[in-house]
Length: 549
Image 1 (spheres, rainbow, N blue to C red):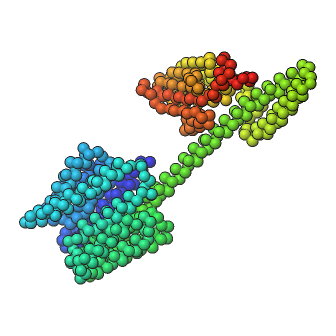
Image 2 (cartoon, one colour; image 1 turned 120 degrees about the vertical axis):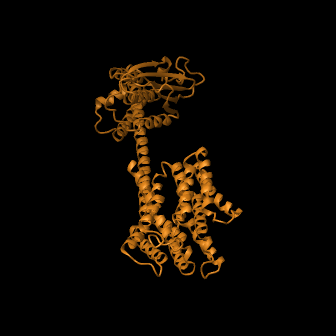
């Protein structure tokens, strides 16, 4: 639904704004709204950086170009929002690479890499190979991830793909290392210890989908330790904690989510509130809003996943119900066919017996008549199980005695009266096919004509061809677009083609349906016929010697 897509856009925009507030208010980014800049200017830059993320899903190319330009402007002005933009730009380029082809991705990636290089280059310092490596790597990595996800789309379920865990671990390490490495020597811990802790925090995202609670505890401890011994690394580690909280919100119940929310609020306050920071009501609300954003996103994702699972289960149940209903109809028709022929056999045996048969022939005829009666009684018992109670005796007799050829002609006549131009071509040799095959062909013709009337409307031309090719009966229903579509489209269950395909499959055949070049529709079925016996009657190729079809 459209409103669900709008919710995603709003959440992305809010997340972008919250991220800028978090980055620019952290120990490494200055004081948001403090002495370095008036509050309204800091708020304006946060909106400029975060709000365009709401357009990322629909307009990734323009958003990437905008963020690249904003990054250059913020770098020249010395605004701390450049740090936020530097995080959002690679993410946007990755989304662009996943949703668009290389004609869009390649030039935008080059511009993004150039803007990153300008941001990383310090005035008066030569642009070294290491700086080039980081400038290109920051953009090339999300491009490769996006292109890989595009190539693997719909191939591997997201919940079972280990690739997603690897990408989360790699993204966590990249975010943590690139955001903190200039400050590894700013605390009391050795550089190698800080670097190891940062890398472990990033790698922990690789198991966050399976152990979100444990990873959230780890990130919280790491954030408190970093605030105590390497304070300028807190902003990037804070981002990892918020991502973990969002994943935790998609898996845990509300009570556990509330506990995780309280824990994250506490460690966020420890990391962001310094000794000289003035605690105001606005700052408390802003901090709580920052932590609320990933919870809201996580619960929304959880609801969407639950809805998708329910929709999938409902679709499977509907398909199963349709198949069972079609098999039930086939079983009913098989009963009718068998009852018709067994009844005819009993009547002929009785007639021959009353005609004066004697000796062993009379005994055989008596046995045939009694056996036939027992079979009919068994079939009547089966009928009470298969038939709906509303079926009356007249309807039953109509199904039992109706000839499939007459059923197809009657269907064509009724649809012609409804406004279709029907052309029925029924091959003569099709009349010699087994009754169960002809009955299935008649049902397919009926359903096909009904679909033509539903979807093409009066005035459409329907061509029905029923014939025999090699060892199969073929049915084709072809139509063009109608010229007088009804004002109110006839309701459709969506199970017509599925039911016909199930009917054909039950006989060992196949059915296909799809549009044709002229704008119409074609329905084609092939129903196998029994193998021809070596000494069968040439006038009835599917008959067995000594029997009638």
